Length: 219
Image (cartoon, rainbow, N blue to C red; front, side):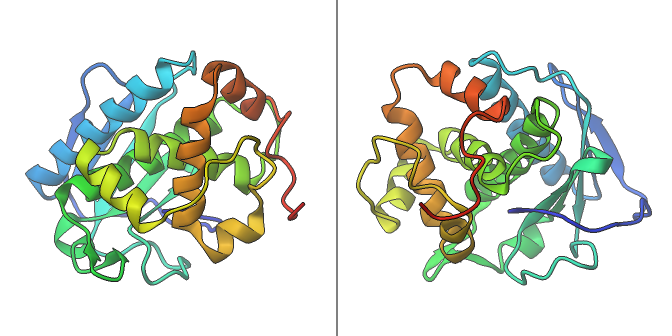
């Protein structure tokens, strides 16, 4: 669940490919269930962001692998996004299920799908930013909001309860320090903040235009 700031090769094991109906997303995987997960997650992310006027027609490729590309330093990462390649790399469910979102919070199939939606949202957002170098904060805000919004409701409520926090009336609390120290709390707060907004589309437009969430430093 992070941006891949690295160069990775295009080589991969021979895999089946699916073009996800109603989207510009393709999925590569050796496992049929992972193919279905990729397309379901892509459809969820596309439908959610399109609701707010975000353009979702740029091509995105999802590749399920047994190991993430070299250079991903976080050993608990389930996936990552390479904007330059318009590509998402995800651990297969068989590998990802061995990790945890938090202690005693294992990754099941529904949560695995939500992680894919997170990374697809990164790619959709990357194609819509009006600024050349959007902040990590802005990128992760959009990805986490999409991730939580597309979760199974009961699972979302359970995870939000595991990362409790007061509702924030403004976006000033979001900064790079918070994301680096507590990424899932950052994500839970992003979702709570977004759901409190009266005009969510206008706020997303401000984020994509670089008019908010651009300060990487704590207030």
